[in-house]
Image 1: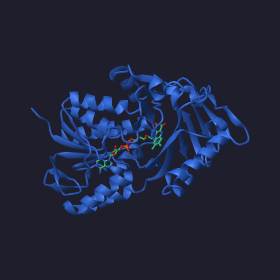
Image 2 (image 1 turned 45 degrees about the horizontal axis):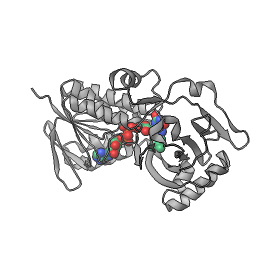
Image 3 (image 1 turned 90 degrees about the vertical axis):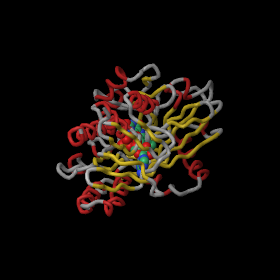
Length: 357
Ligand SMILES: Cc1cc2nc3c(=O)[nH]c(=O)nc-3n(C[C@H](O)[C@H](O)[C@H](O)COP(=O)(O)OP(=O)(O)OC[C@H]3O[C@@H](n4cnc5c(N)ncnc54)[C@H](O)[C@@H]3O)c2cc1C
């Protein structure tokens, strides 16, 4: 017998976690994702035959449920533990070791890219009977008695569901909910929820991939983190630390992530100009050999990581959840982490079980 039909908007870590939790409990889940790939901000780009992680850089699950999922329940054959440490960099002290705590807990990616975890989760969902639809954007929903109907930008229906979980970054989740308010009998309740979702802003981040066909041997650290949290160049990582699919022979890729001020002011700038600024910062940090990349690509993350958080129960007040739950990294302490997004999805899934099953 089929369980209640539930829609999950977004196939990032939170959405996939919610979907699996609900499907395992007996719901029939459809995940609707606007991108052509899985994982959301857990993103890997193919550049030639290389896998390049240009969004989230590594998974540090600590002792969370995600750790046991990755190491015991999902296939771990492709999992790679990044052994080299993250070091700090500052203008005055140069490159130096970080405190032990920073490198204490294991950090992971996958040989074929960090978004392998999303592909494994989606495969698990599909094995359980769930469905994932890619390249499909939910514009709004409308409620009709005990069901909720989802629509795309052209007002084409995705069908009727008994519940919906929205896992988009909170400003986008707020937009979907606000657009839907006129199509519900109690718009005020939804608009109250929009207010709580809008409390959380997200910073933007420009991330640049730089390829060097004849890179010098990689250093004995995996990445550098700026000690000065207001510096333009915040993070510089060597993809080769993640194994052979991330580099080929002497072809190495550096990932530079720029701080909030730089990302805000250069957000609409030409790629070449942005890259030239970043390359000059990189040269100051790791020296002349990295002054002339053979290729680069610029990725702009409008909603990179949340600034602050809203509690799950404030975004989903008991009694008013009705047909709608919201989850994602902005609903967790330590906001802006993969394992926290996953835990938020599980929390939404469990609340959904008590509401809809
Ligand atoms: C540059 C960068 C570096 C980071 N580095 C790290 C790191 O090293 N370690 C770490 O732990 N975390 C890192 N993070 C944060 C981490 O990636 C996020 O916290 C986590 O992936 C958020 O997951 P989520 O499921 O909440 O949201 P998302 O991954 O954003 O998933 C939401 C999904 O919803 C989809 N969506 C949105 N609107 C719609 C719609 N209308 N219809 C259909 N689908 C929709 C989106 O396309 C997306 O796939 C980083 C993030 C960025 C951007």
